[in-house]
Image (cartoon, rainbow, N blue to C red; front, side, top):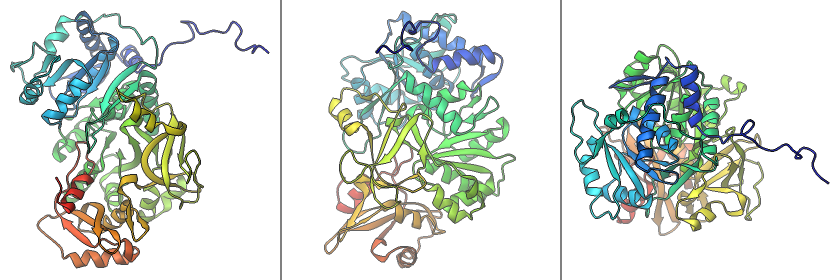
Amino acid sequence: MVNKYQQGLDKNPANYSSLTPLSFLQRSAHVFPEKTAIIDDDMSLTYQQVYDRCRAMASVLDSMGIKTGDTVSVLCFNTHELLESHYFVAMTGAVLNALNTRLDVATLRFILDHGESRVLFYDTEFELLVQQALVDMVAPPLLVAVAREAGASKGLARFSYEQMIKMGEPDFDWQKPADEWDAISLNYTSGTTGNPKGVVYHHRGAYLAAMSNAMALNMTADSVYLWTLPMFHCNGWAYTWAVTAIGGTHVCLPKVQTDEVLGRIQRNLVTHMCGAPIVLNMLVNDFYKAGIKLDRPVQFAVGGAAPPSSVIGKGQQVGFDITHLYGLTESYGPSTVCVVQDQWKALDVDALARKMARQGVGLYAIDEVAVEGTEPGTLAPADGKTMGEMLMRGNTLMKGYLKNEKATQEAFAHGWFRTGDLAVMHPDGYAEVKDRAKDIIISGGENISSQEVEDVLYRHPLVLEAAVVAMADEKWGETPCAFIALKDPLNIPDEQEFIVFCKANMASYKAPRKFVFGELPKTSTGKIRKNILRDQLTGGG
């Protein structure tokens, strides 16, 4: 039988167009042409100016032969140039590769080669790094210098950024992608072993992630967003597009320093920020120690590990309204949010922290969040106890890994995206990650969640950061070892004090047998590098 709702009711240019975040900039330039879109150290730009500049740059790239499927790389701090690249690259049909500013020479060379980068925009601060990375490259990219100081040399580069803007046509007639599934960006994982994998995003996912994330933080045209999150990290969790979508104001911040953050919050009336736990911890502790109380609340969305009760409590006192998000590079950044229910607001800070420790529920563009059962393809009961791999389905998951079909198939096995995190599903439908699958500690046949032990350690008043990894043990096979960064690095406590504290707050077999005090190694996005800590215990690395 023919479906009457399909007869003569086809897609046409009037009722269908590909979703793309490029339309956000076009719209905001139309609705808010004179409104300040970007505030940076060297210039402030209205939405009309940003749109004109992006079209001009796109026209120059187009004249150079940059087209659909080409890769354009950008190595910059959180400046207007990197923000603008989220639009002008895609206007040519090309794919943006925003590069981690902490890459070493070998990794930078690998990414430029693997992604087949045609053009590299780079801040002149990275001149030597770029020069070394291009050595022996068979097909090096065209170089464009981002010189932040007036009159600065463009060094190796053929052009400077502002020269190219002036060369372009501000009325360039860019086109939406023919297919919203077309790639828009290429982000490389900060893998701790082997070469990083290239995660490919599409226009549809970028559009939906931006809308979803703006809604998750209740953003409006009055929102002022401070860039304490690296724009290179999952394209700034899609807030590079989300803030523009709602016509808000981007406040750039090249490097996160407490006084710079405070100054921008106060000068620009910042309403929203995002960041890794290390950024939240630093700002909360520094503000609290200095007795700073913000004039108006600032919403801070933290990704990764859940904030401990001490940070939540101090955060409330200094003026941060904290939201806990969870996600991965493969999910455009945030994929779940711990939605605070009204009844939680009456809880004391410790009880609230236990609720907020959960990763929560899927964001708007995620269809399902589940925990795998004991057999592949089955789901665990929502009992808050049965642990399995956290799974997802939805619209804001990557296309796959560039040139790595095997890894892509493994990531999407059995019709779900497999996060690699072990979790439980609570009766209220909130998921809680207990550990990375590779970080679980098996002691005498018992599974110990390193995250559970870390949560206890964060309650100790001397602890700034904590990481727990497995340590070989002749009797038990493995036991926990705790690495701790102290709030006062000069005040080294007695290890026995921590042993007593842990045993008083958890089952004895879960308590670490060894404590190591000192700074913790981290990735560029603030994640603690447990592989390095494991190597310290085994004598590797």
